[in-house]
Image (cartoon, rainbow, N blue to C red):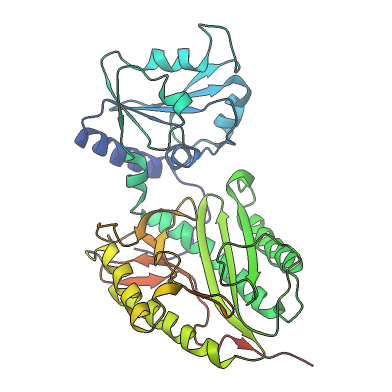
Length: 388
């Protein structure tokens, strides 16, 4: 499988191959027609990404024939401009609408009576309730997305290259007193400019970036990025991250860094975090139970005395979004497969000391794994001098 970056849109044959795999799963599950509304799943099969609002977009997938797409009249030209897949567009005028002219009237006309209809687990109730006959919840498209095609791996390699550049820049401008808002503006602006240089017609609804830092006074609270005016501090641990969705593919890159000095009480948890991370990488190969990876990391942290400092799983899937299945998590008893892409980010969080977490975007290969993001890992490499 090539790791060469790919920036261009999918070909019709790429999308045809995805549809073939979805239909094979439909047959296995004895589903006659599948109905999808999640913008991520619609994008996966069509290359069209919509903004979610009160006007539904509903994709209907039969066992054969072209996809049928129920869309508001307002969006028809937008769909035709962005979609790559062959689509039969079924238009409704507006929402709300008089009886006989609603989106669900159009949908009902596409669903053969007596059919076994598959729907997504995340389908909104207001749409699911409009589906007649037998309705079966089965995340067929989500499951198909687990294993990436060579094209998708190339797209993710390209996205990771942009994140690597952004992360290098973040490391150049880190200093005590640096404010999150200023760091974000600098790094995100550079990543967006590069994206538009390399993908001039990137979809802005499917492209976004964040460059974030947490000083040691906050880094024990992993998702607390609620203050744009927070500043970096002398010492550490600072948890730094650059994440993004590049024209429809989400990736992430994180490191724990220090500015000028490392306190004695930060060294052991940093080393323990690295030990857990190394063990996770050793186990990343096809056939490994994903739950067992998380269990091994947790056992290391408990042995090192940090059993109470765990707040999350070892990793999660990446693909069209930056957070999706599959999961490196206890209780998730599924095997890794070549072509899956996951984060590896076991963390330790100690109030009064801070958080310790690295993360990379990692491809599962035929005989192991390869990281698509690249940055230093050791405490010496990630301790940056402070100019006086």
